[in-house]
Amino acid sequence: MEDAVGSRIRLFEELSVVGKAFGSPRRLEIIELLAQSPHSVEEIARALDQRLSTVSAHLQILRASRLVGSRRDGTRVIYRLAGEDVADLFAALGVVARTHSPDVTVARRAYLGAGDDGPEVITRAELMEVLGAPQTTLLDIRPSEEFEQAHLPGAVSMPLEKFSGSLQQLPAGNLIAYCRGAYCLLAHDAVALLTAAGREAKRLEDGILEWRLAGLPLERTAQGV
Image (cartoon, rainbow, N blue to C red):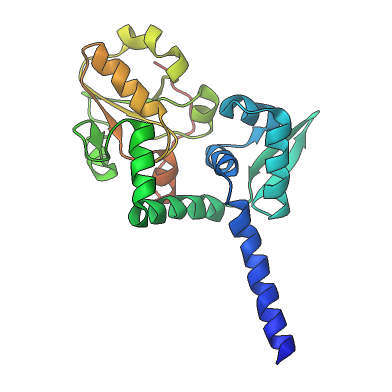
């Protein structure tokens, strides 16, 4: 009996390793970023505005828990999620947290600066109805390298850092912005800039991560404004 109890405890200890790997806000940021595309440690540190040593330490924990893998590309080490199920787990964590934790809802609204059901929000189902329509322009606000890895059908790449200088190039009609996922601020900032410029715009309720996990189509051919 003691052996069975000990084995059971060992099993749950091993399960808790994965839970502990998710138990850091910095590691969650890294998982969200790697859910977009593989990145080097330097790219991750730059994207998240963190020190290389800090990012490296978190990556080692994620590798030890088998949530992240790596490969060499010359002198660089490229990190990637170990599988699509890791992205699934990250997305499920967000859904459960928003459903059951009022504190998460308050923090999300404080970060994003708006609720989830404002007039500027469009659902995935609503987006699919207008996708490809002549008067609809779908804007991918992520960095261009993430766009090139995968993007929503018909989207044009318009990274936020180049946004202000590209506003005059946008066609008339409906503008819809999206970015990485439910906790990405880029699309919110883009809609704010468009509104300030006198344009009507909406943002996707979540982002490309949730779109992909829902099994919806993606494209990989680069296309810019």
